[in-house]
Structures are given as structure tokens and as C-alpha cells.
Length: 147
Image (tube, rainbow, N blue to C red; front, side, top):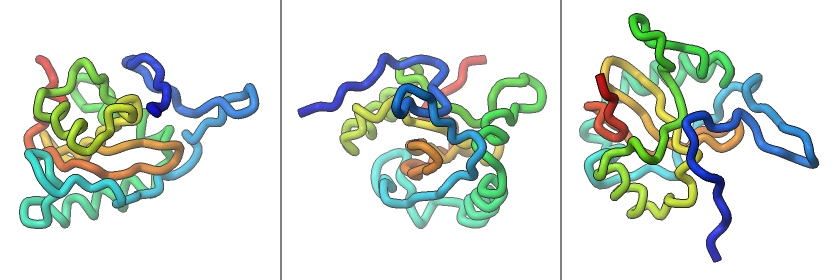
């Protein structure tokens, strides 16, 4: 039986409702999880093509920040959010295919993107304070930006 999911929005909540009040995880540091890695397909977290040094340096850097600090970081020139939830309507066809292959359709509201450098992104599922790393996107093709 499928679990109910809310309608996809541009702004995902920073917490969840527990007993009538919202619990925020913005004051907590991310907890990195590697249990959902996609090991095949266009956005595979493939040991042969991932820039290990860059990924590790950025995970260490971001791991010392709170979720609130991470979400407030912006790109220099555009002042657009650097790390953010992704909107299902803006995902590429290839991204939609990988989501189906991984059976993550019901988790689409949890998809979050970390900018590492230029076009390089790590994409995964933000669940409370945990970030489940799923994909590695070298060319910003998972959720292409429009200029």
C-alpha cells in the first residue's frame, strides 16, 4: 500500500509536524548516510568517476554547518540558493527514470541537492537531519537550471 505524500512545492518544510507542533532540524548538522547509493545509470555514484577528494572535502565542510546555515548559502552572482530541495516538475527525464528505478517516487519531496563546485552536485534524500546520498551529477543534468 502506497503511503500518502504531499503535493510537490518549491519550498519544502524545514521540519515535520509531531503532536501538533513543528520540529525543525535546521539547528542540527547533517548526518551523512550511504545506504541509498545508485550504483548504475547516468547519475551513478560510481567509484571510477566520482571526484573522491572533492566529495570528501565538501562533506567535511558541510558536516560542520547546521542545516539552516547550509540552506542559507547562495551562489555569488545570482543570490540563488546553493543547496536546496528539488522540484519534481523541473527534473530531467533521466532523473525521473533513475527515481523510478530506485523506487523513490514517493520520496520526491525529500530530494535535496548539494552544490559542490561549478556544475557538480550530490543529490539525495533529506530526511530530518539525515542526508541519504543517492546520485552524483557532474554536469548539473539531474535538475538543469534555466538561464
